[in-house]
Length: 249
Image 1 (cartoon, rainbow, N blue to C red):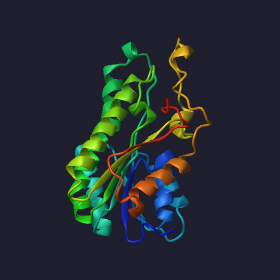
Image 2 (image 1 turned 90 degrees about the vertical axis):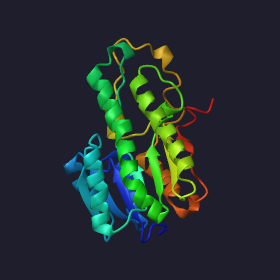
Image 3 (image 1 turned 60 degrees about the horizontal axis):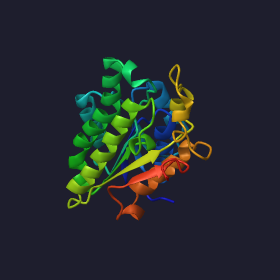
Image 4 (image 1 turned 60 degrees about the vertical axis):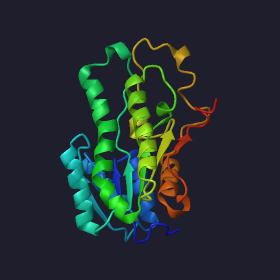
């Protein structure tokens, strides 16, 4: 398929995991890419993994810095002259007893997972209006239902979800679509480093893990590609769970 020929996509979190898989998928279908992440080495590895002939540029991005987010969008426009697809995938996780979460941990979680999505969407919106483009924000099953020891993460991912729905309504007449993907367990470096807090009550975690084996990043990337494509032209404001029935009940 070449659903993204002549389209330009900006992907945050592109150095690893779902972000990298998304970059590879969009590139394989013809998109020109601006790959953004704070991890420069990882960005280089993503570029090296792209199919031959895929046009790409990289940008070292700290999504907690609103000026840096604007600079990333500006770099994309300078390189390609347009922006059609924004994929906000950069994020972090924290599993901890709520009463033990520090101010620093809370603010870091909000800054990366929620502020960064807002900053990127705000900077990109004028260009997406011009191209009648699309936003795909990475929420989570944790944005749909509560999870023990995941309060800060749940709060930010629920915020991403409601922010996305609001954008879908506000910009519907300008034909900018905004959707959220809500993965459950995905086999990425983020979940490889996932640890439960000390003295966690395992009886509280029954719905936190999927009924099936965790998804591969490529499966999430496939959903991002669909939502970014013209095939999804009538799809906006949704929360798409990909979680092995975790949130089905």
